[in-house]
Amino acid sequence: MVRLPEEGERFRGEDPAEVLECEQDEALVSLGPVCYDLMVTPVVGDELLVKGKVHCEVVFRCSRCAQPFAQKVAEDPYVRTYALQDETESVDLTPDMREATLLAFPAYPVCKSECLGLCPKCGKDLNKGPCMCVPDQDARWGGLDGLEI
Ligand SMILES: [Zn+2]
Ligand SMILES: [Zn+2]
Image (cartoon, rainbow, N blue to C red; front, side, top):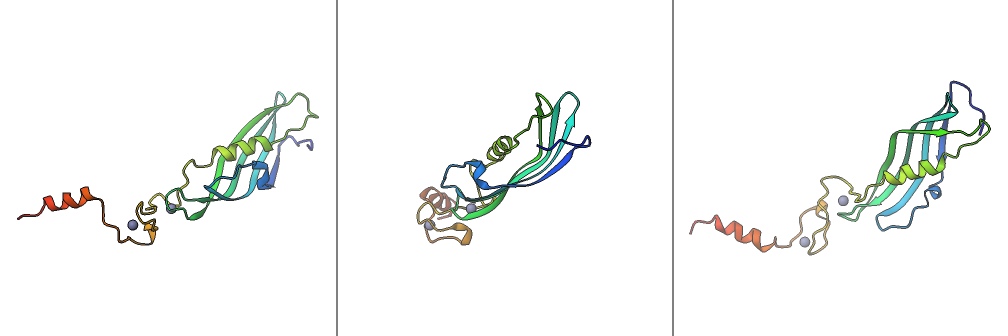
């Protein structure tokens, strides 16, 4: 690593998606590179302060309707400190950025919070309109209760 000026130095760039070592998953369609924009500042007492943002563009498969959608996964602000043994030591920021990105992944990705998902009977994407399936029985009989005979 280059020696840092006292006021710190800004590092911007991207790491290829491979650094995430993501396992292939049904919910994961594709991964973009890990983009970072970080200010690295030396702190008194041989510490490095790393502050900025890290994000990754990911295409997930919606856990409700199974449609792919892009979502930005980010840790913002991203703040880490590193203790240095001596000032010639270099610091590899990749493992921490990788971990931060993976932790920011949603457990159940949904394309939008109001996603209607698929009909459990016919599998139609209900975001595109209602299907012809009859609603379940309880709801039907519930409706009849209101009828005056
Ligand atoms: Zn959806
Ligand atoms: Zn249906």
